[in-house]
Amino acid sequence: MSGARGRRFVFLDRDGTLVRDAGYTHRVEDYALLPGVVPALRRLRGAGCALAIVTNQSGIGRVCFGEADYAAFEAHLEADLVRRGVAIEASFHCPHAPEAG
Image (cartoon, rainbow, N blue to C red; front, side, top):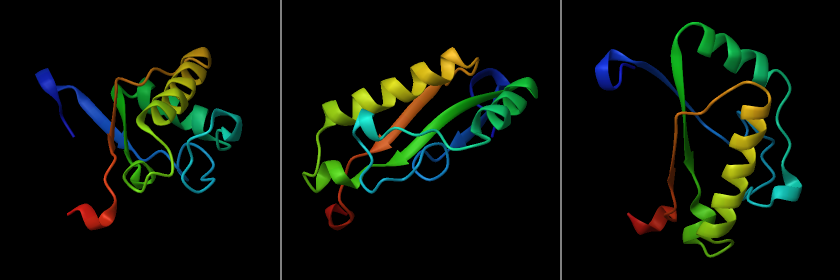
């Protein structure tokens, strides 16, 4: 998908795609990057794609964890990727429970 000024973005799901899905994944101590993620993201970046994370975080709406927990986990993920040479341009999440409409 082309973004602002014709930039190509790849939108990536987070849980089960980038990191192990621990069920309402939000605790930094449960963080586990999946095998092969870093080389794949480097290939996308090398092809000129910007990367964005889009993730459904219904655990926030279900009051299983809060926005601060989500933000801490996301910051940890993005910092880890930067240390490995992969920058994430943007991150978006939906905090609503399914019944919120």
